[in-house]
Structures are given as structure tokens and as C-alpha cells.
Amino acid sequence: RVFGEASTWYLTLPGMPETLYRYNPAARILILLRNPVDRAFSAWCHARSEDVEPCDNFAEALTLENSRGEVEFLLRYRQMGLYSSALEAYQAVFPAEQLRVMWYDDLRSDPAALWRDACAFLEIDTGFTPPFYRRYNRSGKPRSKIVQSLLKSHRVKSAVRRVMPHQWGLAVKARLDDINLQALPAMQASTREELKAFYREDIAAVATLTGKNLDAWLR
Image (cartoon, rainbow, N blue to C red; front, top):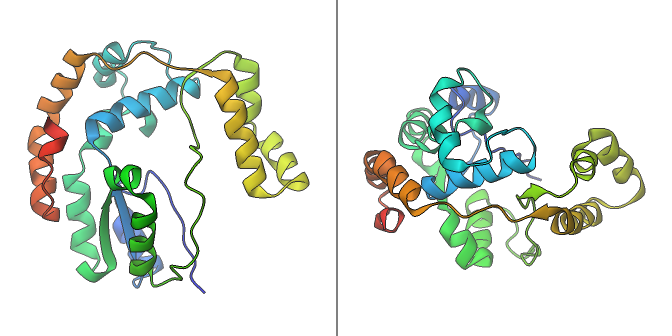
């Protein structure tokens, strides 16, 4: 039997590799990396849908980032995409055979293959394949803040878990998100170019650390 956990914050939280190693030095660490430009925009979209980002323009939100001081990690759009120092921190603590970097692009293009690769790395059964057809945690501008607040409520989530299986609850939430969330404006081309320039050096460092050609991230 294998126990696991997942979090979007473990990669960049200071001191996390050491904490995980103290807890379980034999842990196998999977890291899934996304183009940091797209990650930053996705984080803003998610923050808007969660009603924690008051700025309704992504480019303006980026300019506000440095003036906000200590804010929650979700709003650190640029900082959270600087992967190289985080990878170095994990590589300094865990043996290479216990680390695996995977790629969001592969998750999108062939999720089943990525799943099999992950299972093989974790040494768990590769025969089970989860459903890949539904997208969870969709982002967007809520049509109704009341509905969105209910969907986020831990009390509501606890009540739902008592009356239906977990996967059913996720499917219901995804359907309600589809109804309640409106699409947000696309990222402006000028903002994309600005972020590519910001991340260029770090992307090169990530490519060196992983041996992965990441030229596509800068196109």
C-alpha cells in the first residue's frame, strides 16, 4: 500500500524539501511543471474566480504584485513561476532516483501516458486509469458570487460528502462551475512577451537542470 499527497505549494515553499525529507526520507517526489507564463495567467484567472483578486485586468495585476507586500502565494504570479531555484533545492535534498519532473504539456497531449509513467515511477499499479475527460477547478468570472461562495464553503463540502461519493461531488461541482463561471479575457500579446522576457533566464536554467528542451515555452 502506498500513501500520497499533492499540493500546488510544495514546490516553492521555503524549507519544504527538508521538511518532507525529515518526514519521509524515502519519499518519491513528482513535480509537474507548466509554462510559467501560462501558469501566471491561470493563477490570476483562478484568483478571480475565487474572489481573492480584486484587479480585473491581468497586466494591471502584474504591476501591483511588487507593491502588495506579503500576500498569499496565489497572488505572487511572477514569483511562483521561477522554478529553477526550487528544483535545485529538491535536488540538493533528495536522491535523483526519488525525483521525477513531468510536464503539463504532456498531461494535456497524452494524459494516459503521463499517468502510466507516474505510476511506474511510484511503483504502483499501472492498470487503473482514472477518467481524463472532465476538467476540474475551472476558472472564470462568477455570474453569481453567492453561488461561488457556496461552492467554496467547507460546510457545504462536508455536507455533500456525507450524502454522495467523492467523485460524484466533484462532477456536480464541475457542472455548477460550467454554469456559473464566465470566461475571462485572454492574455494580451504584449503581456505574454513581457513575461517571456522575465522568465527567459530561469527557463534556460530549468532546461539545464532537467535536460529538457523548453524552447517551446519561449515561442
